[in-house]
Structure formats: C-alpha cells, structure tokens
Amino acid sequence: MSASRNDTSYAISAGQVRAARALVGLTREQLAQASGVPMRTVARMELDEGTPQRRTLDAIRAALEAAGVDFIAENGGGAGVRLRRSSSPADATAPAAFAETTVTALDALPTKAAEDTEKR
Image (tube, rainbow, N blue to C red; front, side, top):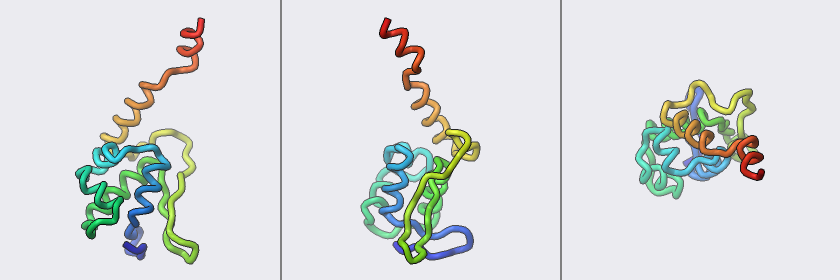
C-alpha cells in the first residue's frame, strides 16, 4: 500500500499501522474495538495481507488519529507516524470505545499516593 493523496486522507501502510499502534500502546483488540474493524482484519492489515477496503483504512486511521497519532505522508523522506502534541491525554473526538478503554486502563494504574500508603 503506497501513500497517495486523496483530499485530506491518504492510504496508510501496514508498517504505519503497526508503528502507530505501538506509539500509543494499543493492542490489536483495542484498535479493533476503537475502529469498529474486526480484529482479524486489523491483524491482516498489519501483516500486509490482501488489500483492505478504503472504509477499513479510514476507520483504522481515524481511531489512531483520535488516540494522538499523526500520519506523515511520503514526501521524499518516507511515510511515517509520530505522536501529536496534545494538552490533554484523551482527545475529545476519540470514539467512545477508545475513550472507555483509555479511562479503564488509566483507572487501573496505581497512583503515587496509593503506592506511598502501601509502602508504610
């Protein structure tokens, strides 16, 4: 899959999806839930198996962008991904499934105060 401009969106590669998912710490299952794409389809996309439909690419891309990823188009230096600078950890435009997953994951993390209390 090559990156080619199409309005404001362009095709994303298997490598970009793998890298983007790793940057934001999502599992395939979490990405599938956030994008509404079956997990098997996400796995096939990441393995570069077959040719995903445009709506599949758009859904995966939208979920990863909502998680804070910027996709970088092929511009002579190679296509890539990077984390977007953000003032808040959760983007208000994130799909509900992603937001719930993020909140659940954050709620499960121990707080500094709780760790200090446990040490005493």
